[in-house]
Length: 157
Image (cartoon, rainbow, N blue to C red):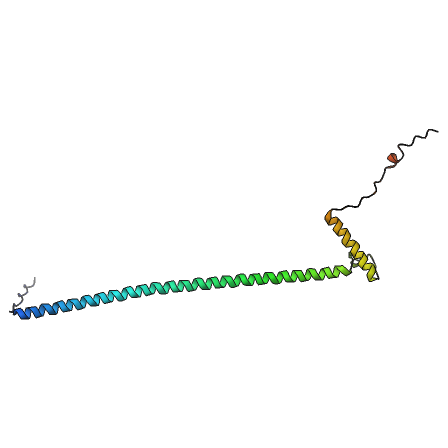
């Protein structure tokens, strides 16, 4: 074991020296306390700034996401509108073609040389389609069986 450390040498300090020394110690303690408070204040400020920056980044990400979603929906609507327009144009072209031709003439089952006859035939076809759609049926003459036709003839001569 090592020998015990010699006791610290005690020196005499006057009251004034002791007061100066205690003032000095208090001053350094206050400065250290102030530095510590300042450091804590800076840390808190940085933490809050970090939080604020993170919130701002999150808001920006959400804004960009909403913008992309809006653009995607707009693009989808535009595409659907174009498709509807194409379908409308196609239907219009087909309707124009059908107005001047009958389905029988398209199948080469009917030769209609004159446009007036074609128009009349197309009109008849349209009327037949309309009647079928509306459920209107032409009254057909009822066919009588021969047995029913001659059942009430009572000629016994």
